[in-house]
Amino acid sequence: MDIPGQDEILIALLRVAEENKWDKRQLANALGIPMDSVRKWFSPHSSRRPAGENLRRVREFLGGPCTQKAPVALLWDQVVSWWTEQHRFPTVDALAEAIGWTSTALLECLQGKASPPRLVVERVAFEAGLRKPDALGAAELRRRVRRLHRLLELLGDDLGWFRDANVEGRNLLRASLNFKDVGYYATLLMSLAEEEHFQRWSALTTYKPRESSC
Image 1 (cartoon, rainbow, N blue to C red):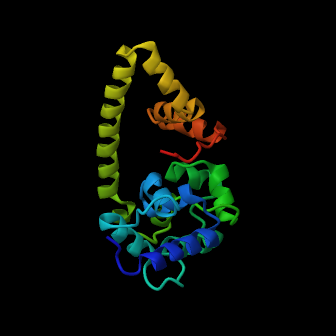
Image 2 (cartoon, rainbow, N blue to C red):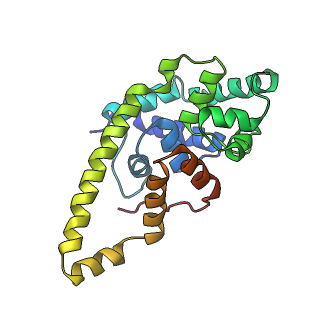
Image 3 (cartoon, rainbow, N blue to C red):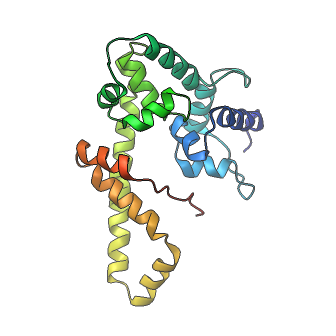
């Protein structure tokens, strides 16, 4: 069922993405909404539109009239202003270590060459004293951890099925998967075991997975 104003909301999201030079994956990260959902909103082959909790998130993200700059972008403007005046962190490396991100990516964002993910914005804003600790989204973090546990259970079940299937079944799987993407997600998941490993993976990995067509 269509909800009044949905087309205007999508237009506003596109405007925000264009202003921040975001692709759909970066927009999804900023919204805190799964990439697949955001992709379907803008697909000419899908009738899916923001609804329920996702609609609430989008409206909260836009924070008012469609012509306004997104709250996350406004907050980042404050962060950049703070960075030029602060004396707490002597280098970008020191700030990057404090928030658990790579210094190269952080420097590009501070210089306006790239747009930071929403979580990075909130972490730096917290270090800058612009946000309280509860702004870090503890509830969202717990929700995503639970969902990832569930996804791993489903993945294990399906992989076990293909392990025990016949060769035709595995050939069908091979033909339908992009194994570069599989390698990307597998190594990302393994890197999350330790922060040092993740930082090394993040610094060295240049591959970007393609958008899902499922």
